[in-house]
Image (cartoon, rainbow over all chains, first blue to last red; front, side, top):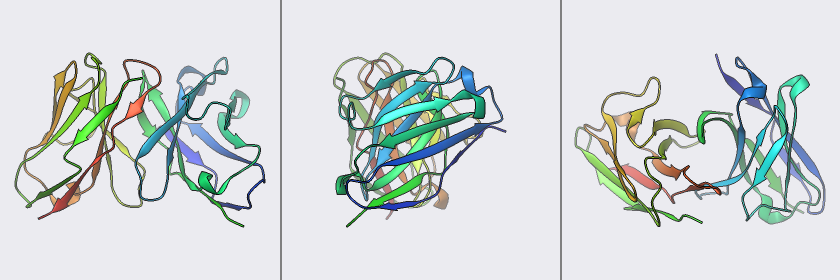
Length: 117
Length: 107
Protein backbone atom coordinates (compact mmCIF):
# COMPACT_ATOMS: atom_id res chain seq x y z
CA UNK A 1 0.00 0.00 0.00
CA UNK A 2 1.39 3.38 -1.00
CA UNK A 3 1.63 5.72 1.98
CA UNK A 4 3.02 9.17 2.54
CA UNK A 5 3.35 10.11 6.20
CA UNK A 6 4.12 13.72 7.04
CA UNK A 7 5.65 15.17 10.18
CA UNK A 8 3.48 16.75 12.84
CA UNK A 9 2.09 20.23 13.26
CA UNK A 10 4.52 23.05 13.99
CA UNK A 11 4.16 26.38 15.77
CA UNK A 12 6.99 28.81 15.06
CA UNK A 13 7.86 32.47 15.46
CA UNK A 14 8.61 34.79 12.54
CA UNK A 15 12.25 34.57 11.50
CA UNK A 16 12.70 30.98 12.71
CA UNK A 17 13.72 28.15 10.43
CA UNK A 18 11.76 24.97 9.82
CA UNK A 19 12.07 21.68 7.97
CA UNK A 20 9.05 19.39 7.56
CA UNK A 21 9.16 15.87 6.23
CA UNK A 22 7.26 13.39 4.11
CA UNK A 23 8.13 9.69 4.32
CA UNK A 24 7.09 7.40 1.50
CA UNK A 25 6.48 3.67 1.75
CA UNK A 26 4.91 0.87 -0.25
CA UNK A 27 6.56 1.82 -3.53
CA UNK A 28 9.95 2.57 -5.08
CA UNK A 29 10.64 5.99 -3.56
CA UNK A 30 13.34 6.84 -6.09
CA UNK A 31 11.12 6.23 -9.12
CA UNK A 32 8.38 8.82 -8.66
CA UNK A 33 8.34 12.59 -8.36
CA UNK A 34 7.09 14.05 -5.07
CA UNK A 35 5.17 17.34 -5.13
CA UNK A 36 4.54 19.89 -2.39
CA UNK A 37 1.28 21.85 -2.23
CA UNK A 38 0.32 24.77 0.01
CA UNK A 39 -3.17 25.49 1.25
CA UNK A 40 -3.57 28.71 3.17
CA UNK A 41 -6.47 28.92 5.64
CA UNK A 42 -9.79 28.83 3.80
CA UNK A 43 -8.09 28.97 0.41
CA UNK A 44 -7.34 26.74 -2.56
CA UNK A 45 -4.41 24.54 -3.53
CA UNK A 46 -1.11 25.99 -4.74
CA UNK A 47 1.78 24.11 -6.33
CA UNK A 48 5.09 24.83 -4.65
CA UNK A 49 7.52 22.51 -6.37
CA UNK A 50 8.53 18.96 -7.13
CA UNK A 51 11.51 16.69 -6.59
CA UNK A 52 12.66 13.44 -8.14
CA UNK A 53 14.29 11.54 -5.28
CA UNK A 54 16.26 9.33 -7.64
CA UNK A 55 18.59 12.17 -8.59
CA UNK A 56 17.21 15.11 -6.54
CA UNK A 57 16.18 16.99 -9.69
CA UNK A 58 14.03 19.81 -8.30
CA UNK A 59 11.70 22.35 -9.88
CA UNK A 60 9.99 25.26 -8.19
CA UNK A 61 6.85 27.14 -9.06
CA UNK A 62 7.87 30.76 -9.76
CA UNK A 63 5.89 32.00 -6.75
CA UNK A 64 7.95 29.85 -4.41
CA UNK A 65 11.39 29.99 -6.03
CA UNK A 66 13.84 31.33 -3.45
CA UNK A 67 11.23 31.16 -0.67
CA UNK A 68 11.56 27.48 0.23
CA UNK A 69 13.94 24.59 -0.36
CA UNK A 70 12.81 21.12 -1.39
CA UNK A 71 15.13 18.19 -0.81
CA UNK A 72 15.09 14.42 -0.38
CA UNK A 73 17.08 11.69 1.34
CA UNK A 74 16.53 8.55 -0.69
CA UNK A 75 18.31 6.40 1.89
CA UNK A 76 15.36 6.91 4.24
CA UNK A 77 12.64 7.49 1.60
CA UNK A 78 11.93 10.98 2.88
CA UNK A 79 11.31 14.30 1.17
CA UNK A 80 11.61 17.66 2.89
CA UNK A 81 10.32 21.19 2.65
CA UNK A 82 12.24 23.86 4.49
CA UNK A 83 12.25 27.56 5.27
CA UNK A 84 15.23 29.57 6.47
CA UNK A 85 13.21 32.47 7.84
CA UNK A 86 9.48 32.01 8.36
CA UNK A 87 6.91 34.76 7.91
CA UNK A 88 3.37 34.97 9.26
CA UNK A 89 2.18 34.53 5.68
CA UNK A 90 3.71 31.02 5.65
CA UNK A 91 0.91 29.90 7.98
CA UNK A 92 -0.80 27.13 6.03
CA UNK A 93 -1.37 23.43 5.61
CA UNK A 94 1.34 21.80 3.52
CA UNK A 95 0.77 18.58 1.64
CA UNK A 96 3.20 16.26 -0.04
CA UNK A 97 1.99 13.88 -2.71
CA UNK A 98 3.43 11.23 -4.95
CA UNK A 99 3.10 12.01 -8.60
CA UNK A 100 2.11 9.67 -11.40
CA UNK A 101 3.26 11.42 -14.52
CA UNK A 102 2.44 14.97 -13.49
CA UNK A 103 -0.71 14.55 -11.43
CA UNK A 104 -0.89 13.77 -7.73
CA UNK A 105 -2.02 10.22 -7.13
CA UNK A 106 -1.26 9.67 -3.44
CA UNK A 107 -1.34 12.38 -0.78
CA UNK A 108 0.11 12.75 2.68
CA UNK A 109 -2.13 13.76 5.56
CA UNK A 110 -0.77 17.31 5.63
CA UNK A 111 1.39 19.30 8.04
CA UNK A 112 -0.06 22.43 9.61
CA UNK A 113 2.49 25.20 10.04
CA UNK A 114 1.52 28.15 12.21
CA UNK A 115 3.80 31.18 12.34
CA UNK A 116 2.91 33.67 15.02
CA UNK A 117 4.72 35.99 17.37
CA UNK B 1 1.83 30.19 -17.38
CA UNK B 2 -1.51 28.48 -17.87
CA UNK B 3 -4.36 29.89 -15.81
CA UNK B 4 -7.12 27.49 -14.78
CA UNK B 5 -10.58 28.95 -14.14
CA UNK B 6 -13.31 26.92 -12.47
CA UNK B 7 -17.00 27.72 -12.47
CA UNK B 8 -19.18 28.15 -10.65
CA UNK B 9 -17.42 28.96 -7.42
CA UNK B 10 -20.30 27.38 -5.47
CA UNK B 11 -22.87 24.90 -6.72
CA UNK B 12 -25.97 24.13 -4.65
CA UNK B 13 -27.40 20.72 -5.47
CA UNK B 14 -29.96 18.42 -3.87
CA UNK B 15 -28.95 14.83 -3.07
CA UNK B 16 -29.71 12.57 -6.01
CA UNK B 17 -29.39 15.37 -8.55
CA UNK B 18 -26.73 15.78 -11.21
CA UNK B 19 -23.85 18.20 -10.74
CA UNK B 20 -21.82 19.66 -13.59
CA UNK B 21 -18.56 21.48 -12.82
CA UNK B 22 -16.51 23.38 -15.38
CA UNK B 23 -12.79 24.03 -15.74
CA UNK B 24 -11.29 26.25 -18.44
CA UNK B 25 -7.61 26.58 -19.34
CA UNK B 26 -6.13 29.80 -20.73
CA UNK B 27 -4.43 27.76 -23.46
CA UNK B 28 -4.64 24.18 -24.63
CA UNK B 29 -3.54 21.50 -22.16
CA UNK B 30 -4.54 18.63 -24.45
CA UNK B 31 -6.01 15.95 -22.17
CA UNK B 32 -3.50 16.57 -19.41
CA UNK B 33 -6.05 17.48 -16.78
CA UNK B 34 -6.83 16.00 -13.37
CA UNK B 35 -9.69 16.50 -10.92
CA UNK B 36 -9.41 16.25 -7.14
CA UNK B 37 -11.95 16.15 -4.34
CA UNK B 38 -11.29 17.68 -0.94
CA UNK B 39 -13.56 17.25 2.06
CA UNK B 40 -13.26 19.49 5.14
CA UNK B 41 -10.27 18.60 7.28
CA UNK B 42 -8.97 16.05 4.78
CA UNK B 43 -6.25 15.89 2.18
CA UNK B 44 -7.35 16.10 -1.44
CA UNK B 45 -8.04 12.87 -3.31
CA UNK B 46 -7.44 12.15 -6.98
CA UNK B 47 -10.69 11.51 -8.87
CA UNK B 48 -9.88 11.78 -12.57
CA UNK B 49 -6.72 11.98 -14.68
CA UNK B 50 -6.19 12.23 -18.40
CA UNK B 51 -9.37 14.36 -18.42
CA UNK B 52 -11.63 11.29 -18.33
CA UNK B 53 -9.99 8.29 -16.61
CA UNK B 54 -11.27 7.52 -13.13
CA UNK B 55 -8.63 6.85 -10.50
CA UNK B 56 -8.63 3.54 -8.64
CA UNK B 57 -11.65 3.11 -6.42
CA UNK B 58 -13.56 6.13 -7.71
CA UNK B 59 -17.28 5.41 -8.21
CA UNK B 60 -18.73 5.39 -11.72
CA UNK B 61 -21.03 8.31 -10.90
CA UNK B 62 -17.97 10.55 -11.37
CA UNK B 63 -17.08 11.23 -14.97
CA UNK B 64 -14.77 13.66 -16.72
CA UNK B 65 -14.81 14.98 -20.24
CA UNK B 66 -13.22 17.58 -22.48
CA UNK B 67 -9.90 18.37 -24.09
CA UNK B 68 -7.95 21.41 -25.12
CA UNK B 69 -9.25 24.27 -23.00
CA UNK B 70 -12.72 23.16 -21.83
CA UNK B 71 -13.32 20.41 -19.29
CA UNK B 72 -16.25 19.12 -17.29
CA UNK B 73 -16.60 16.98 -14.18
CA UNK B 74 -20.04 15.41 -13.85
CA UNK B 75 -21.42 13.72 -10.76
CA UNK B 76 -24.45 11.84 -12.03
CA UNK B 77 -26.39 11.45 -8.78
CA UNK B 78 -25.01 13.28 -5.78
CA UNK B 79 -24.54 11.27 -2.62
CA UNK B 80 -24.11 12.83 0.82
CA UNK B 81 -20.40 12.02 0.78
CA UNK B 82 -19.90 13.98 -2.46
CA UNK B 83 -20.45 17.39 -0.91
CA UNK B 84 -16.94 18.80 -1.01
CA UNK B 85 -14.63 21.15 -2.91
CA UNK B 86 -13.41 20.05 -6.33
CA UNK B 87 -10.23 21.25 -8.01
CA UNK B 88 -8.95 20.83 -11.53
CA UNK B 89 -5.22 20.81 -12.32
CA UNK B 90 -3.40 21.02 -15.62
CA UNK B 91 -0.23 19.05 -16.11
CA UNK B 92 0.59 19.84 -19.70
CA UNK B 93 3.14 22.55 -18.92
CA UNK B 94 5.34 23.58 -16.00
CA UNK B 95 4.53 25.33 -13.76
CA UNK B 96 1.55 23.17 -12.91
CA UNK B 97 -1.53 25.02 -11.71
CA UNK B 98 -4.75 24.22 -9.92
CA UNK B 99 -8.02 25.94 -10.56
CA UNK B 100 -9.59 27.95 -7.76
CA UNK B 101 -12.06 25.20 -6.86
CA UNK B 102 -15.81 24.63 -6.93
CA UNK B 103 -17.63 24.00 -3.67
CA UNK B 104 -20.55 21.61 -4.04
CA UNK B 105 -22.98 22.24 -1.22
CA UNK B 106 -26.31 20.83 -0.18
CA UNK B 107 -29.30 22.70 -1.53
